[in-house]
Image 1 (cartoon, one colour):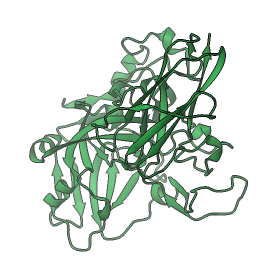
Image 2 (image 1 turned 90 degrees about the vertical axis):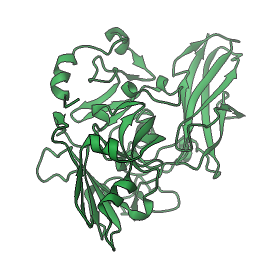
Image 3 (image 1 turned 90 degrees about the horizontal axis):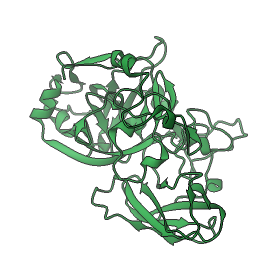
Length: 399
């Protein structure tokens, strides 16, 4: 496709829900939140916080499968100015800075000139689950759906940089995308990575689940850093700039930071400044996809709890389920883990509710490093509302 005129197309489809999902169904509450009555192009109706920039959350019921469909994959942009189209005749990914030769690549060149690599990895916003913090933390009040898992295909970042030739003394890579601030004094979204973090699993992706990247998920290429929060996964990648020194940037030095202490937390009632550090790798987490809140099930019927668990790549050891409010826990059945250590792991647990009324179902993940998903009340608070991973809870009604 030579030109992706996205927002013009959106004017045409904005009044129509995605195929297979009626407007009536889309307007009904789901897990305490409402789906939008309309859908962006290439997306189903989703929980929508903003249309400029697009902020779309995946509904809970999607998290029963390890792979998140492209049309249900969450969307998070920082700047309101997103290109209205991408013309592949003029698009180039540029490599500059401390390199032997500055280069630029078309999308076709990235596909043809570099070995294609596939990695299955979770993409999660650092603020996912923020709405569960008490007191309220600043930022988009995401539920649990600012996360997804996909099979990404692209070229190794290392291979691209080696083609340009990295000069001696180069320690940092800066990543620039095509989204722009609306006000000229607002800093653009730029991220940096130290050369030591550059592994073979870090790629510049042009495919997502076997298809070209959806426009809202970073078309034509985006950065993939498995195990890291999505604020580092720059979308609509335009420039890779190699530098000798770290450059102070708003989104690394002011935003997306947490307290630099053992609990990564602070007193919400204190005005004392604390030392901070950027958020990087994800923590251990599980989410229940079915049943959702307010689901009705029959007493003494077989009810199967399904969901997904993940961490930063250390590996999920176990997921435990409680159906008595956390008094007792039993192990769920995990999938075989063949999608890799950065992927969702599906889990399932079957029980027969024997009493009528409300039943609270809880899920807790434990990884191979011994890290345990904590209770919500055990979660340390931070002013940005980042890295929430409290034990997941849904409440169903037994009838």
